[in-house]
Picture (cartoon, rainbow, N blue to C red):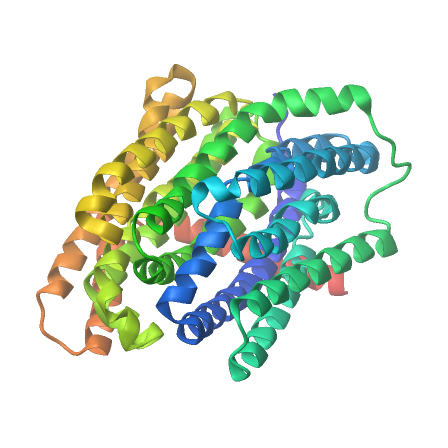
Amino acid sequence: MSVATPLAEQKLGGRVVRNLAALFAGRGISVVLSAAATILLARYLGRERLGQYGAIYSYVGLFVWLGTFGMEPILSRESSLRREQAGSILFTGSVLSAAIGLLAAILALVLAPHFDYGGGLLLLLALALFDNLILIPFRLPGIVFQVDLRQWYAVGFGLFRQIIWLLALVVLATGQASLFWVILARTLCGVAEAAVTFYVILRRGLVPRPWRFLSEEAKDILIQASPLAISALAINVYARIDQVMLHAMSTDKILGGYVAAVNMTEVYSLFPVAFMDSLFPVIARTADQPELFDRYMRFSFRSLMAIAFGVCAVVTPLAGSMMLLVFGAKYATSGPILAAIIWSEVAVFFGVVLKMGLIVRNLQRYLAASTIAGAIINIALNFVFIPRWGAVGAAWATNISYTVASVLVYLLFKSSRSMAWMGIRTSLPGLGLALGVAAIVFYIPLPFFANFVLAILLYCAGAWLVGVVNRSDVERVRQLVLEGLVAMRLRAA
């Protein structure tokens, strides 16, 4: 068994911390920009047009998985292990993505009228499909930033897109432009991001030449990615089908309130993605070191679940006031939707960590089974819940299906059971604490900001007392930060 030297661990720790610092700084700015764009879009479009906007991108989301076919983790892993061949590996992935993405876009347009997306919505769908499918091959080589632990490049390009998108929204809102111009502007922002990403990769020579299409590698990539692709399909179904079904079974005005609540919730999903994207190349190197692998997994579960339950503890009792404050009086009645849908983030955070661990251990075949089960349950529950409880019913269908897909199904398989139990045992104290704090704050008649501060203080104090956050986690973070600072000083010198 290989064991890293203290010097190697220190250098790696320093690089990870620098990467995490850049990622979280970028994600922090990204959250602000995303929130600003979400608020402006919701207030500018109103509930009905926001519902149409959400319906379009939810339908497109059902096909996005075909654009990458689940190849990203496989390409990242292979490029990390064979850095000198990364150019050909990523080129092969991009060619596969271009071919599959074009077919997926055509299929989506052909099927659209059968899902009540006819007439003028077809042109809007075509624009959204171009952004979300046709441009993917130009973004895919950006995987090299993850491989080299230089994800600040990707974060920077994402911030660039968000800034020009927010500026475009300001101009469009000022001129009260139609929905067509909103979607066209978003697509053009995607073109700009893809162009900048591809240009920087070429300019800096980050992907080594030669770039050759590796036919044998292509077959292996598709075979290994197939379980991830099926999993991505199921994820996109149970992540977006609720909005597509609300569009078909309800009204776009009701859907608009649901979209606003979902958009507010999805802002928090940036944190686990940033955290695990940064750690994945590091944890991938511990696949043959069980003790070190388990240590990273426990740390990841504790850190992310502490954040997830903290968000739920604060948002649940204050959801109505938050919707009113953020989106205005038109969305005040959407508070119960937010109070319900925020709990889906628990499963999202949990699933991000577990998915990473399964891929590192080459157990990605179980991802397909779990997500297919989640998708089937979500569709079935939506058929029952939406007619009875509308958007709130769709939110609870999402919560149940996410929990099944991200947590419970993995208990059925011997190979994944230990990782799932590790996460569940780590999460139980946080679940109890979040429910307790939410109940206390809900029944205390204080002004909004006083209750907001109270919820945060109660959760932080409780997290320390019940062990949601423990001393070893704090010490590990402190150690990594110190190592990162030392490494940055040495590099500067």
